[in-house]
Amino acid sequence: MKNIIRSLVIFGVLFQSLAAYSQIGFTASLKGGVSLGKMHWEEEYPEEFDRDRSFNLGPSIGATFGIALTDLIELETGISFIRKGEKEKGSYEIDTFPIVYYETSANLDYLTIPALIKIKPPIAFSVKPYGIAGLSIGIPLSAKVYQKMEYMGETIDTTIDVKDDVKMDFGLNVGAGVEFKIGNILPYVEFIYDFGLVDISKEEEETEETKEATRTMLLSAGIKYNF
Image 1 (cartoon, helix red, strand yellow):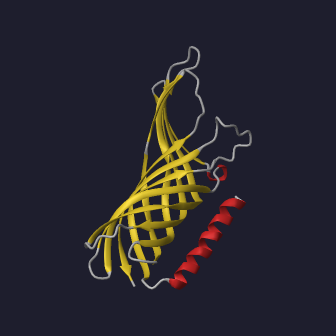
Image 2: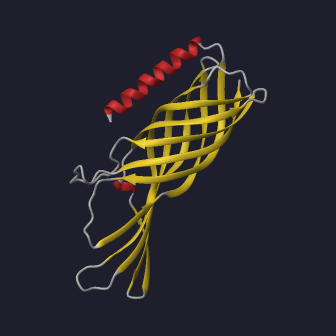
Image 3: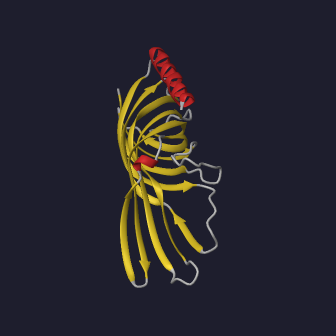
């Protein structure tokens, strides 16, 4: 965690230093879209379990603030609400008991602060693509697991609050986007893949097989204003 905080502080200092020499200006934007989350772990389940894991669809909304160093390079930070997690369904049976069918949905809501660099090609068009790379830190706001089980003709629905079992997230962000220049207004669409680098589980008996990391795809559209 100390290394994470140190990295963000260093990036912030560089952000401010470069801003002092920037002759282009500042940008601000609002954006919204969807997230597709999935967890990564190496835990092996018994053969009695039949599992099918899939992406968890959620919201992604936020605001960004940037410094355009040149026409080609922009540094950007901001704050976003992003839902991570995953969905899973399957069945299992124990000894001679009837088969249990289940569906779970893990909704992990994070307040995310990115530190990104956007690089644009030197083309003089009103439509301009760009690449995205950087880091992000996520502060857990809410973490709930919704579970539906079917057993011997009965259905049981439960909701479990697991916020106390979830830690801060830290991820590597890569992606691409396209912006459309209309005067000082720049509508844009972008895709970012947030690759979780740390274990977010607070399990005491932690091993390589039980580490849980997030994998989240973010598709969003927004409107940016160039000051």
